Image (tube, rainbow, N blue to C red; front, side):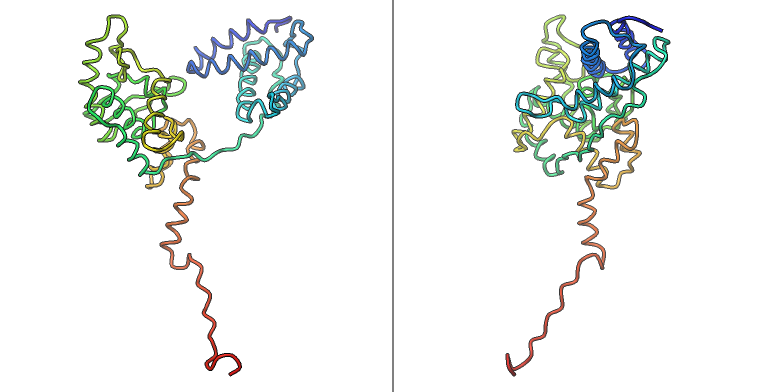
Length: 332
């Protein structure tokens, strides 16, 4: 059991454990690091700027941190942290204390009984199928950039990929003949994803242009493994791909609604709309739990209502019967 202020050392060991033992992605590791840095700062301030004794921490300390996050306000008086951000911070704190307990650095877990705030589950704002068609039609021309962008948009929509999965694709991970690709999702988990005919054709059209870009790239800058590259031959970044997708959303008249994740939502929503089993969609998207995938069933409830009203003989309200008018007019 540790004594004194071992926060920095144990946070570093915890970060290594998350990366090596749990295989978390770099972005997730960075989020844990930020949350736990803030938590350590709070504990030190609570200790009056002195050393933090992990063995002396109780659930009251952790609850005080959660209350601190929930009550924080910005200069305009608005909540500084959303419920989702607070819940994420609680997950990081719990992970840290559980690690300390499991590894023998602490005798108890003060976060075990601390509840995280409930996060409202929003309904994804999927595009309509007509809007997807308009988006894909917004890619015009036959130059290298147009071929690449068309292949990116088609692949995002066809495969329901996260943007990090898209830019992480290697050429060797795509089998156009069999119609599958290997995507590496959260925690470096690999899954096999079908590639539709249209997306496969778009990728196939991009490959010769990609070869030309790599052939003209300066030595040392090109990434010969990357499927999607920038004009200098380097692997396209998440930020670069995001900007490309958003630009086509503006061109297609979608305003600021479009992001790579909206295309992922749209892929799942349209599949559920057309009768796909939730377990299949779960596998396609790489969700760890089917409960995450169930949010897409909410999106289709309005469509279900419309189909029901149109198809069921007793679904619609009957029109009120006409009131007979006595012959001869009033006073007859």
